[in-house]
Image 1 (cartoon, rainbow, N blue to C red):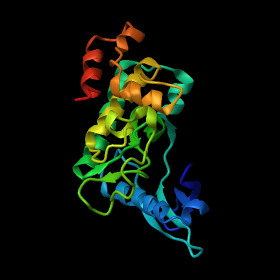
Image 2 (image 1 turned 90 degrees about the vertical axis):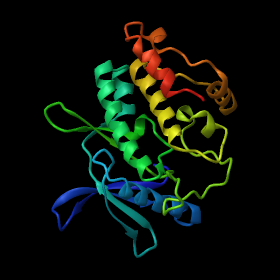
Image 3 (image 1 turned 30 degrees about the vertical axis):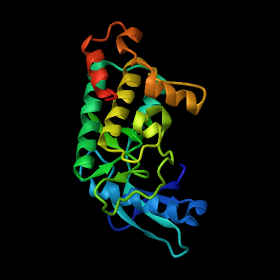
Length: 242
């Protein structure tokens, strides 16, 4: 990934497999990079939810490389599912969104804004018997809203996150981003899961920003007419600009 190399390892004491994420050498030399890496470990540990990937340990190797030890998940992320299977049934999307929002509710209660909710960060675990269990991943650019350990280190106007899922506030680099930006991203992600398309796309960053800020919200039922009409109402509320 952008911040580190990920390995599967064996925990010698627990006799189980875990994931170890090592920070990249380039970021190890960056003070801000180290803070972002530490932020990921701290944020995931502070959000006590079964729907957030569990962090077991965090430290620095003898050679100065930071690491995070996390649970090993079995399954695949939502991005992979949509790429291979396309739009998903409303009942599946409903269950997925409910579980994702439980994770975000805990994060927001802890004063943490994820800021990078997108399909590749929504992991669909194999819970057995065909049951869905969702885990929210990657708190690497999470922002604290209470001045705690997960603090903001980027300059105002510095764009962090995935533009296609950014709220209007986030795409224009507003300073006081709060939990509502995460909820906007949930709306965008839900639209994509139901229709197979993103509501806003453009060839340039400027064009994308203009669409996110100004364009009318598209109706999911215009893409998939068989969707319940209530889906349009839900999406309009989830991505209400005001």
